[in-house]
Length: 209
Image (cartoon, rainbow, N blue to C red; front, top):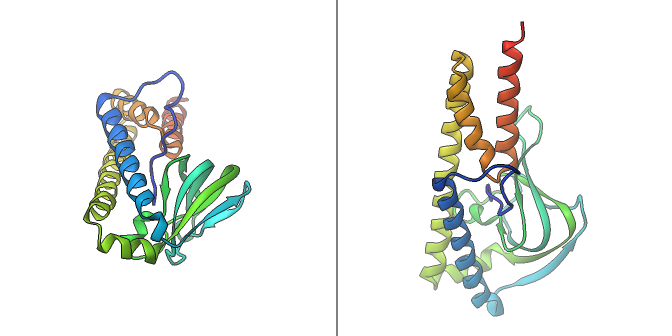
C-alpha cells in the first residue's frame, strides 16, 4: 500500500535533505512506473472510475484484484488493527498509485482506501493483467520492486524515529524528543505529523504539576 503522498510539507517547515531526497526518488519512481503502465494500457483490462467523497475504492483484507492510478481528487488510506480504531496512514493525490504493493506480497490489501476529496477520477487496472504484463517487461518488474523497497526503507526510518521519540519521552529527554518530532512533522505524511503532535502533547502534560 501506498504510505507517502506528494502533498507539500506542513506550513513553516522544510524537509531535511535526506527526506527531501527520498521524496524526490519516490516521485521519479512513480513517474517511471506511470509511464510504463501507459505503454501497456492498450493491452491491459482497464477502466476509468469516477468516485464521490466517502466512496470506498479498496477495502482492507480484500483480495488485491486491481491497482488504482489517481488522476484527479484525493484518496485517504486507513488501516485498522484487530480491536483498534481506524487510523489514517496516508493521503494519495493525482498521479499516484494505490494497491500495487499487494502484487508483490500476499495479494490482499493492507488498508481501506476512500475518496477524501472529489469526485475522484481513477484509472483502474486489473491486477492479473498487470502481473501478466510484468512477466514480459523486466523494467515494469524492477520499478514495482524499487517502489516497494523505497517505501519499506522510509517506513523503517519513520518507525525508528517514533521509537526514539517514545524512549526520549519515557526518559524525559526533551531535546531528543523535539528532534524526532520535528523530523516526523517535516514529512508529508498526515499520520506521522499527528503522531508527533501527540507526543509533544504528552510531553507537555507530563511537565504539568
